[in-house]
Length: 328
Picture: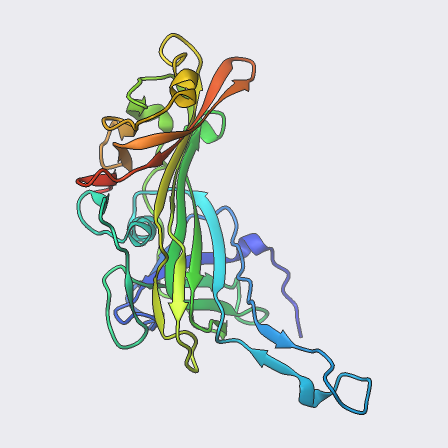
């Protein structure tokens, strides 16, 4: 009998490192499931392929012999968002998005991303498992996605929302068939660490200017690609043709920033010093450095205070990193 009533917010999200790409390890021991601080859980779009069209026969009715369904040659995606913490779960997501585990995390100008074969080779930071845990195992199942990659990761902060607390969002993709009926009692590690705020940043630079900033966003976008197909889904995983790093900020219009509209309008070169820099009072609290970038937008923001919306896209200059994030 179905007795429980629960909200989508009652589901919890965890990630688990995979020692073999595409293979979810044991979830019931060792506190392997790392909790993520999510506002609410986004559920996967299953994206099955179905054929239900009438084909040539004497009948004008769709027949059972004409039905076809495939759940292997597809991509399954989940979107999550919440408050950012400096703990192993949230850092693991960023490491996967950047395909980096060095100190600090870095995307080099010659970044090539992760690629490999599910089940037979191990690529560090290549894939992980995502678990959406049901509030109970009587009226709901856990959803387990193995072989996951972070295809989009964003860090944002707005002084008008939650005191400028850093927020995160991620799109997580898998080329494997998900387990939609898992009943494991998870062994978990709670998320930890206080929220980080834009208010505690000691350095804020945009296009080598020290502006008064009300909000910012940094986005890493790297689509996943999959190839081959076996009984458990795709065979190979990798990153697409381009990884892009973009930033945006809302800045007060004043003597420091008044030249930005003209800089954008007449742009012929990139900023190669401090295109976008946010340094926290504790440097390892996700301090961000994007040294070289082109302006992608400067527009007037007509609020109670006159502001500017500024957008940038990181560019490789043949050496160094296009992005570093300090989390050590």
